[in-house]
Amino acid sequence: MDISTIFGLIVSLTFVVWCILLGGSLMIFVDIPSVVLVCGGTFAVLFIKFSARIILTTINVVKNAFFTKPMNPQAIIEEFVSLSKVARKEGLLALERKQFNDPFMKKGIQFCIDGSEGDFIKRILSTDLANIQDRHVQGQRLLKAIGESAPSFGMIGTLIGLVQMLVNMEDPSQIGPGMATAILTTLYGALIANVIALPINDKLTLRNQEETLTKSMIIEGILGVARGENPRMLEEILKTFLPGKKRVATQQK
Image (cartoon, rainbow, N blue to C red; front, side, top):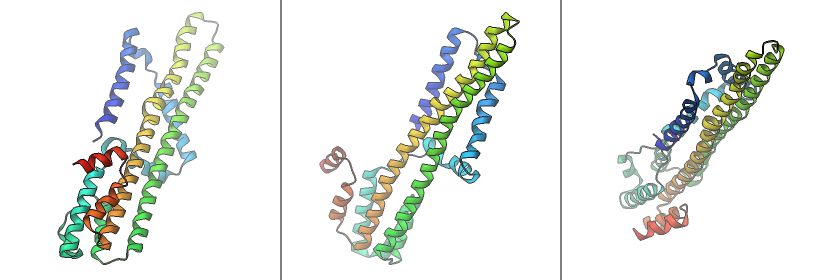
């Protein structure tokens, strides 16, 4: 579970509620028609922009922002150094005794055990990685669409409320409450976009970058094991994926 995402979401909503309570009752900010317009309208627009399949599969992608922790690149290096030593000493078949938590790594090592050619392994795993990246991009596009549509429906709701208010100008006592209700839809749209959709989109972008890095390392590590690469040389190859500071820190260990 990614604590930072959940922490940020809870704290940001807490500040909003706290500011509301400082100025009065929370219930004056609750308006069911406004919620229905902003949430329902935003959700409906998604079906115009995307297929139902993409919308449904994106739910799993969004979970990455909350429940997926990136693999540790240093742990990947250490794992492949160990695998390389076993493969050179006992042969590739000895890798069958190893247990792998990551399905991507497990699939690639199984190719090695089966004696597949390096070009074949690289082609299959690279295609898998490209498909993973595509799913992440689709999820990011959908969240960005929510971030764009929610404020728009908020503004639409505000305009509707203003029109209704102006039509009933005969009763001045209703102008203040009517204006407040009209503005609430803008508030709801802004909250959905700037507290939920766009921040989660940014976190998914980060997760995509991290997963691309780690899976690229895994592909290179698997190819090195398949080639019978010297463990020390394979370690140096995989270190090239690390940023400069982390590479230096790894060498000092």
